[in-house]
Length: 347
Image (cartoon, rainbow, N blue to C red; front, side, top):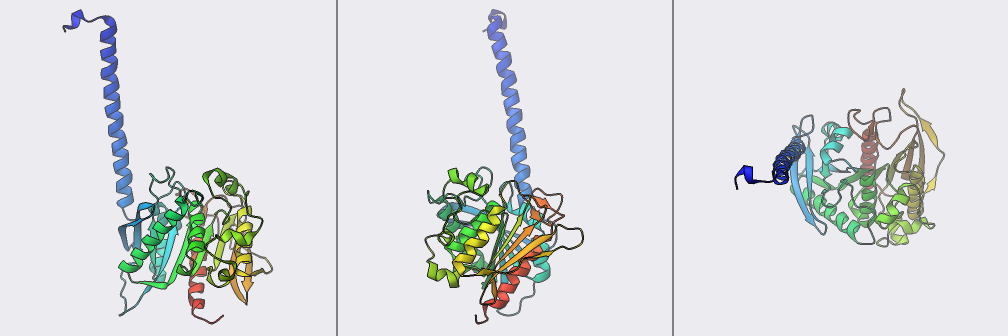
């Protein structure tokens, strides 16, 4: 139809439609570019030497991507196996973010161990959180089984010593790590929870927020380790636990640290010793309480003064880190490597 025959209203509609189409296409292009840049960033290895090796594992919760860090210049002797540290990131993070912020790869290169960084799928959780709390629907257990499938795959593909596998996580990653350790206790020689929620404190999304505030901790701590572990078996199967938590955490209440220690202590028959305060230079001070059984530390509770919801001693330029805190990465590895050494000794 000739333009002169169109009504002013129709011409205005066409102009608006054209402008909207142009804006939509421009926005879609920008979004596509942002997604492409984000994907490229994840494929880019973290700073430092070594290999950043991608993989995908399939399990009851679907597919989960992961990366394995392999130190540079590994010259393995015939039959030599290396320890494996499994690192579970927190909400709003990726595996690469967690690797950069914790500097775990740098320590792995020096101490000669492999590091596995599973990646939460944003379709499974829009914020990138592990679904540690969704026990009632079965989603949490399915996700835990999928993470075990990733660990199995890495242990098969790489020279991993299955008797020297440790597990660590931050926030939601810490809570998922606790679920993994209670569901599959014989798979890990050590567990480190940084700023996580006490085991058994939530069973659904509705109770997760209350658990983060320090509510819903079971009145009978021994039951919090899950139905899969009997009280008798827990004494010999649960791995030793390191708990790191800041007393200024406003996201996950610091009361979860003490609750977690009590849960693990009751389940393993451990008793608390005298607390001690340690401080290195101007870094935040930490109060450490060890829970022991038969002379061995089963739980080490480390409460860090002035630390918020952040990885202690992490890279200052990254989110969810506090460079002023004691070096959590070194603390986690020192705890894990000690358990590796003690594992073969009689109790």
